[in-house]
Image (cartoon, rainbow, N blue to C red; front, side, top):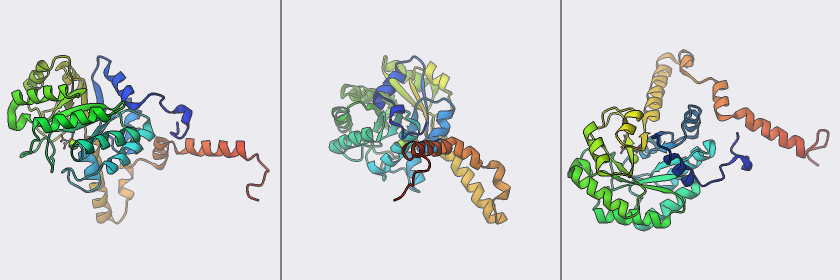
Length: 307
Ligand SMILES: C[C@](O)(C(=O)O)[C@H](CC(=O)O)C(=O)O
Ligand SMILES: [Mg+2]
């Protein structure tokens, strides 16, 4: 349905709906979808929650994922995905865009935009993709203060603490950090860039009863596991953060090469969503019909529309 009809909108805050999905025993599968159109296509396949990736949002803006985007840039994406689908979204909050007060501002602004959950990471700026080398870690205390700030600001937003410590400080330290973040009020933990099945199992074994998120990004350090495998290793959430963007970028690259080589797009038609398919995805005709029905109701036929 078009999102503009008030009576059709979800009546519970997004964070509550996200928690309800996590209360079920099966792993919550969240593909990345940082654009309204992508989100609608994911929804069509039956996904119940989505992920907004900092890497995907930055790359879409032609920027590296080094913490340069702002709260408002992210809200532009949250709003369009939340409006288009009404689905709960987990949003990448990077390092919180500053210190404690910035984190509080981020939480409130994300909630207002329609987010359900956020994750915050224990890096210093310029932050990096968790699967790269030479990340600069924040101290446990700095990160715990940010988690506490997020908890104090939130009304319903689900707060996930990500630790990037495994690579530089090892499993033991990462587990200790995660425990401190839970004490500070985190609802769940995202152990970033684990590199083996044994590490995933070990981390989960050391965090009994804690909701854990697995990041199945491609071309990173984590080998491929399916959602079912992560579930059996004790994980409650899985994200495929940038996959949709990587696929789209490759498709754009091919298209531009083809136009450059052939002087037109005719040879690319079989790889395009047709106009009809696009309009069906964005419910073009439903919006048009809604508009027409209102005009019919308010302005009966035959009555002059302007005086
Ligand atoms: C999950 C992540 O934070 C993101 O921004 O999507 C990235 C993903 C990536 O760069 O592959 C990450 O740091 O893992
Ligand atoms: Mg990120």
